[in-house]
Length: 110
Length: 114
Image (cartoon, rainbow over all chains, first blue to last red; front, side):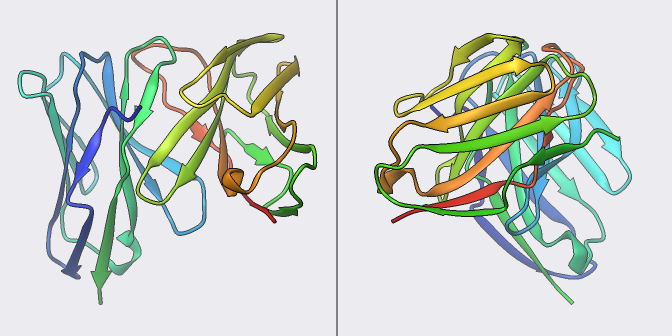
């Protein structure tokens, strides 16, 4: 069964704007990961945040984690057309029980 | 860089056929996974393996089996393909379970069962 649920399901923005995607989950986790998938391809790992961390940065990506609310957000700043993809959160209990959500489809218009 | 390869990008089979999907990783990872991806449902775990000859069922193992005879290779087998198994199949590997390890995915196999 799915653990993470992304919100919104789809997001369309202009190049240069920021994009925020949210993920909610139901049970306790060891870490939460965000992945990106270009159309028809495999997933690529973007960033991992552990359960004892609250915020993490990687380039134009910023991830937050609120374990009390069981939610995470992925912020992409200064978006580019090349950021167009689907983004998935995955919750990891640390024992190979890793669950993915249905994803947010991001479209960045040039 | 880790490389995960899958034997086919596109595959068309007939109902009742036995189907083999192969996945190979080149970084000596312990853990390997098979998912299927369907619109609106995200990725669902079919099976995973944490060691050679070891396997565990995921959320949707019915109609599938797996084989891991060598560390680098994890095969997904559809014993008798059915139309509801038409899907995108993704293989992934990970060094170990735990708080520091991400999964590396193959490019996917889009299977159509007629």
